[in-house]
Length: 614
Ligand code: AGP
Image (cartoon, rainbow, N blue to C red; front, top):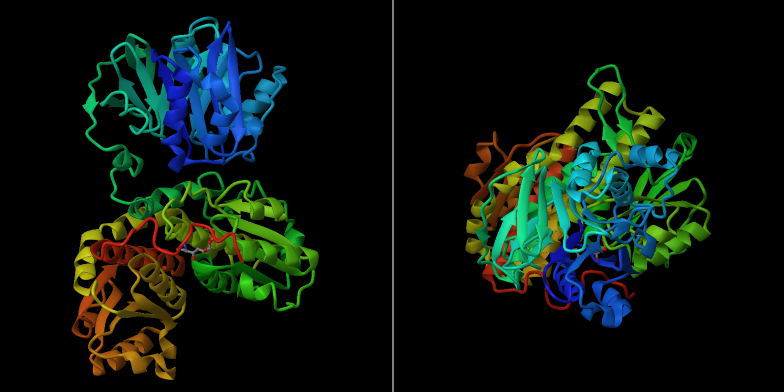
């Protein structure tokens, strides 16, 4: 997810673009750049790092007397976050500059064709192919060149395009990624959302898919299929803060609701399930060259993480052992690194981390590599320290996770570990073709299934209101319900400041049940499965001691209503579905309790988004 801004008709347009980019950094912040027409060519300034770094690099040029500029703040998906991969990307002939938010699935093919025609590329990005495609078609009519190039693109895009010899003109286009047009008097703006626009005008047109916006200082044309269409403005009344959160009250809630699209996007260009039932699913691993023989030779797997990422590893362990039959050990990195662990080159170490900067996980990775192990990083932040030091990476591609409480990264980590389990099971032939197809089909369908679970939001808010004043909470589950219980407890703790503990329900009688009385709410993950009867037994034990019971149960389970005070129902299915679908009610419960208790949900006290200290 990146942020783009374009401006025509406002004085000091470079400064306007910079301010707009700063307000879009919640969409991405690993590199940034700006471009403007100058003397018949394109002036271009880009920086790895934040928009502030770009501003420093630009210096006085931010105040240049230019009225046309485009800019970009990046969340890398293709190519490390270094200057050459920052946007704007400029065509080889220097005539066309492009800023882009989205993913072009067929950019390798397009780049090959352009290179065969003699075009020299300078970056690793998919966006550079767009700039050169438009340049190839450009003969003075920028709109026609853009509209000729767009149908060649597979994937998603929000674009701002500028030509060196046409100051005063920017062309925007969108498919799958948002693009807004600010309608001013004598000026116009393009931006990924309304945030950069509303300081200048609240009249906004939100482009539809495959629409093109042509903006000049005194004119705006919206086009579809090559012809102008009628359009109408929206009067945006949002505050800038509300616009940043896409209309949600907090980033945490926005990111909980982003999970369906995150999980949908995650495998879009990594997993193919051919329709023929006798064909094998295709796993596409562009960032990892571990050979099939290597995977066959693994003796065991160590999963390194902290916090929420560790809980994802606990779920991942069950899936890897069940599908790939490789002994798998989740480890708190902070303990692992000081324990003089037993390692050898047959051990695969997987570091699981949203930020890629957790210091304990980074040091544990270094220890593993010094011991001769290969390290795979399952990481969200492209180009982060752990991503750079690992032997291979599997990017979660969640987009920036701004809320300190990790939500979308957690479910993406589970899905990523499941993807690896399936790939290893396929290579090691521990799972037959039909079962792997069924499981792949489940994985591809998760995003859609989560939509149904998100519909529980108001029901969970009502439950949150009932229990918001509890002093303590217990979360209990069995099997993969156990790490989910731990994650539910962590979520509640870190955003609502209620003391909460997550346990394997089997552990209850070994101590925690001493805590149960009429003041103790106990959240049971009771979705059925081999241990369902056992967890029902645990519910009875809590009930006998007057504990207050919230049960997460499947739609078909009518009996549980007789023994639980509150029941949240979801459609129970396969293991991976349950593991991911259970996460959402837990996240929503923590969120709503926190809001009802007046916590600073996105920035809870004492916490940081990334623990870069030991
Ligand atoms: C999650 O809600 C917490 N904020 C925290 O436990 C986090 O998961 C942990 O610090 C690990 O962070 P990482 O995934 O960036 O390595």
